[in-house]
Length: 394
Image (cartoon, rainbow, N blue to C red; front, side, top):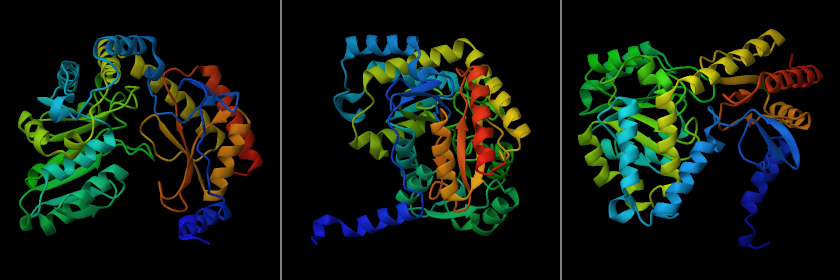
């Protein structure tokens, strides 16, 4: 046996297989739509973040092609050298207008945004206070910072107050970070109370609105708009890969913060910028959302329809306040088997297990979109009930 055989990884992968939690990444053979093709079979797609159906929308495809024809296929460099085109500047301006904020800085992804912004705006002598269920990218972004860190219990304002009472006076800047919408359970952060505490204790606020962008607020302006908190959140992060249907991330902030990020946000300094096709498509997505609320309303109508049917069938769907709908199985191996059985019945829904969620909290997470038909949702619910009864989940 050679060291190059990576025996330590072979043992760990074997353990995953023994525990029944080993997975093979699915391969989609079609565009990401309400129905997709997997292994040559058409199935209902219930695990995409394509909330509004923009990922294959003809208007976005056309805009992407036009951007390629004018600008080519790549930005050619990092933003701070020669990768920053006028089309990038246009998208930042349109997003700032859409979000009702002073400025927006684009990033290559939501993950890159958290990795770049948190470390750039905090330093030694500061404190980051984070919700215990914040996204992995927030956790990793916090680890990159030289600031100290503290964690408060999930959406527990008494615990947040306790942390601030104990620690605030010992630090220069204190940054409170929370997801706007928590991606595994679909609940919404109590932003008004968080902002009130932040202002009481002279803290900055940072909201990762990945799953609120395009879904909550007027025409999908997000969680900050949903709570009418414009001007009281210091940093709002959004992704452009979910409801917006493409790829990328952004931070909405003050112009002075954008100026600083251009000098210190490492993904902007050391990774090639977003390609023109992506930016062109995103400009069209912002335009479509600004024109009409029909996309967000359709997503919500379908989500409520699905939730009502699943709840009536006896499934535990938690306490989601958004289109994200967890269907709890709890046992991890059973969660994997449940997902596999649903796929064989024509319903594609991804299993969510440790380390994405805590052990014993396995679930399949359903993401209903604006482009699902009632017939597709009825078919999916029927299969959930069939498999759920066979596996004694309901």
